Image (cartoon, rainbow, N blue to C red; front, side):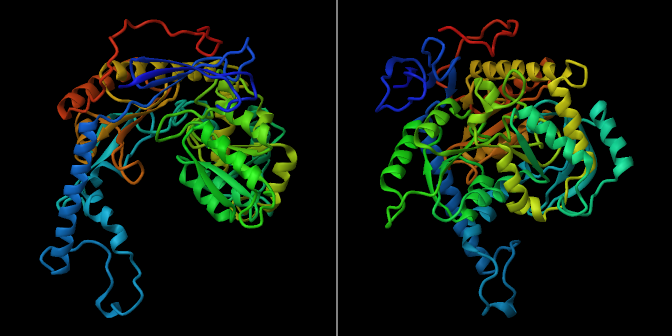
Length: 552
């Protein structure tokens, strides 16, 4: 039996089951979890926090395991045939004259890649030949050897509705003010800087960009880097080391995981967005200290994301901040997907919850999504940023950001802030929120299982069975809709999914076309698994108070 949980928390600063009275009202309805917190306007939450994670149907789970089992059996059979030269082997293998060497390629670890991934490889790495906007043009390709290699036909598939790019605010474009400004800066500064920031690569545009980022975030200072992944993986080791404890959400991005591992800190993983799990680990860390010596930890660093890109969930930031204050820990917030995509001003998850940016010790984000550019940033206190300028490998050794990329960031951020003299940025933020609510509601009404928060523009739709991963991507492309499909090991083995990313550039007609095709393909592949369909509701005007306090 599935239930709807309406949870009411106690006073601000207290969020544990041990210290806060919680009132649970269980009624058999669905597995949607609604978290609403009030305390005379002073509670941790000032609006409903709705996230849906419907349980996998038992029959679907059994069939999924059976599907992977059958594929595994056939994989071993094909490996046997390859070893005996009965079937041609396309994978990288050791040369005969190097058989006595230590193996260069890990053969067994690539079992999944060569026997399962190759069957549906055509669903990924599709080359595009246009701006990745609301619509894209794809280069057509075919495979004559079951996806081991591809041949290009020379034909372009045009006008494909793009439901996969992280173009949340629609700034991935080649026309308009941002593109013109980037082109002008290219003519003045060139494309490359050919030096690091500490040597001859520190341009006035870099200084202006970092000052603008700090103003946008509401922090004292900020520093920018040329690669979003490296912003995490190269800066976490500068902030944490031996004798420190890192508490990481189990669904954190690979860049956060790598950065934590490179730091040499002790790492402990808490359950996804589970504040009871996080609180228990914080309490144990304070009580027991370091292993063996039981000395206090030099520092405790909590790593979370704003929007989790595979789940579509939003971090329970008010509770995380309450816990970190209570236990004296530091908070590292990755806003790669949430900056620009959440909040009434597009300033991320801190803005979304109406919190003080000073309560987040390290505010990290990327320019690759909402800003249509490249790179990442870290914002916070001036002392923190000055420290990173000297100690971060990305700041010391990496080449400076390209001038046209910097200009794209400056112009798009000014547009969002309204400093370009228009309301275009605010309109895009509003349109993204409208599109997100509309798309998620329609998907639920059609009977699909979708994950995540009701305000998240990342919309995972569950496929489960491995055979349906490739089938869904191919059938959608046949109908001129480009989607991203995801499977193991990027997700749990029975939770394969399609992931839609909503954009402010999508018109209602585009979304309706996509929804119609998704419903058609969903019926064809029988992936409308939800047992709790909502009745279709009349289209209504968007509620402009979506970011205001909502009374229960």
